[in-house]
Image 1 (cartoon, rainbow, N blue to C red):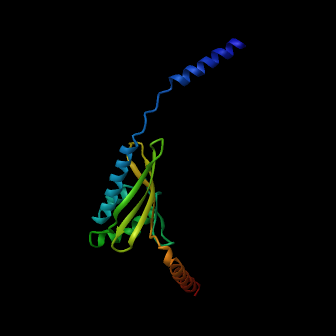
Image 2 (cartoon, rainbow, N blue to C red; image 1 turned 60 degrees about the horizontal axis):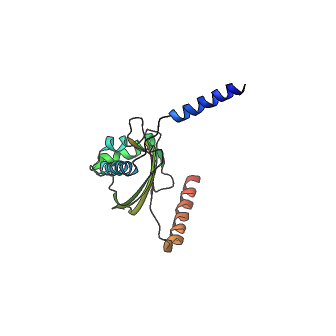
Image 3 (tube, rainbow, N blue to C red; image 1 turned 90 degrees about the vertical axis):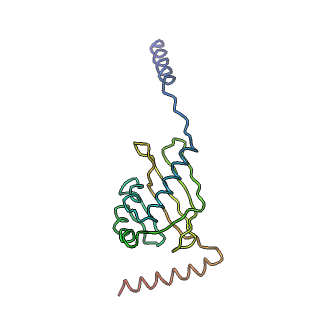
Length: 175
């Protein structure tokens, strides 16, 4: 029995030692790829390129969260809502990144980021999101969240305005 145990133990140890060594992730290279993708994604919107814009998402179940509390869409829901913006004047929206920080997981399969954006229609805004690497090794957006940062000095006023709007909408919906 003791010999069988030793043989099994040696087999397990040999298997563990023979496992292929995982190549270290070049995080700087992956960050550069993510930055390139995100820049192209924003440029696609600014150029009104609907297909290019939506091809950067992982799939139709990926999430886009807009600035309004009601704006939580899957890509399949977001496409019909946004299509008129892409068709209108050749510019869906124009978000110019002024700062971005990209993080890569130790496995190199997941990335997340936050960015500060200059936008003509929203003013200073922020985006954050998660990307995943697909089976071809290409980064795709799985989740994006667009926000408008509110300076603390005016939070109380903005909160009051939000409550007024929500109250009016609730009254309208109950009529």
